Length: 313
Image (cartoon, rainbow, N blue to C red):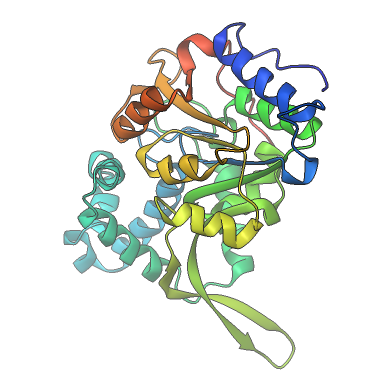
């Protein structure tokens, strides 16, 4: 095993739990795991980057909703275009919290609008829009660009795992094609190792070129029980390490490891109001499960000596 975690991880039980696990699965002994099976999966929103006061992708999307509402005043009285037009961050952020408590009413409105917002957009055009957004957009309350809203301890953890022959994947409820253009730049994770929700795609043949275009329909929403399904469909291996922060990550965390194989499940606890945010809404079940099962809970306040990565250009 190479050098352990350092820098942005404080000395203590949490750091020791991670280093101990990596040491056991990489050293010849009863817990040794072949490098091919050292698969780690990470949620994204609230795990690798900031998700409050709303997920970053949601800010990107509501800017598109606001454009649509400006062009069509009738939409200004219909959710979620109404919230986008009025910059009602509470309604938009609450939709995800409601989802994590089992109420998908507002989320369905959002998902339906998303499919309309990007209908018939080519994959290359969408990619360019995402890149432009991260070049220019700032977080609404933290006073820093979105490209600097990734968590530096998590990036350090990704590098530490890779140095110990883990293959790292992102498995998120967010749109995989929103994460792919920036995952390499922010996290060093290539696009082929990003698993996430997806709009449907169609193929169009042209005289000189062919295109893939998004359809006005979801292909799948990669959250809750769908996460293990998508992980297995994409990787074909059961992870031995998983990291999340919300109730929607519970099935992914539970799926990681088996009784006859070592595993590590990690939850990020947002308890640092000074440097980021302090909240448990949408994570109550996951935290209770972690306490019952003895999973590792990372206190952002106590376990991280620094929080955010520098802005990446």
